[in-house]
Image (cartoon, rainbow, N blue to C red; front, side):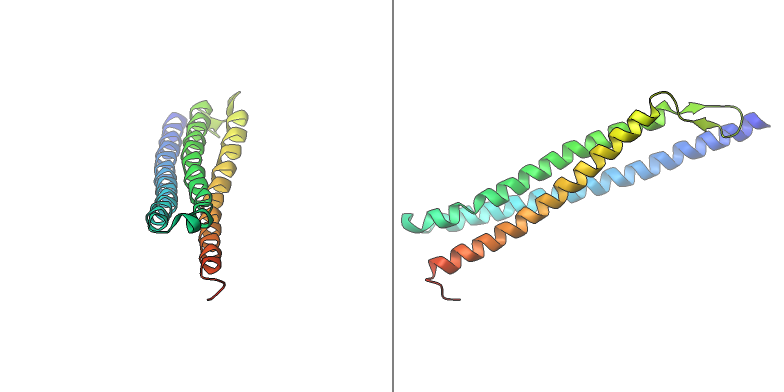
Amino acid sequence: MRREDAHRVHDKADAFHEYINKGAIDSAQLAFRMMMLINGGAAVALLAFIAKLDAAHRGALADTLVWFASGVGFAVAGVALTYFTNFFLAGISGSMERRWEHPYLVDGPRTKLYRCLRMAFHIAAVVVGLLSLVTFVWGVLDVRDALHLLNGGAA
């Protein structure tokens, strides 16, 4: 009877882990793709706009590209950090020892390490995701200021 209970708990834990992990991976991928898209799109649009300016005015707007390029870089770093977050999450699941008596699943020798690493990479992924968004907003504000200066301070 205990063996059946243990199998049921193990199967439930496996199914829950698979469901939650897939949702987390899909959400993270979508968020970072969007960050790459908005920052990359802004950079391309700005490059097209700068190409139509005379050389004297290009410099002021060209400097703002660094914000959008940084946003793309942060988003790419976020994809890598998300991968490692999920890698260590799988490590947590794989490191759990399965028992035939309650509580059926207990931490293994490496579980604590995997939990710490997963949390560190998760926090880092959230931080670079936010940085990607912040650099986009900062870039937009910087472009606005540069255009304001190019127009002689007129609104």
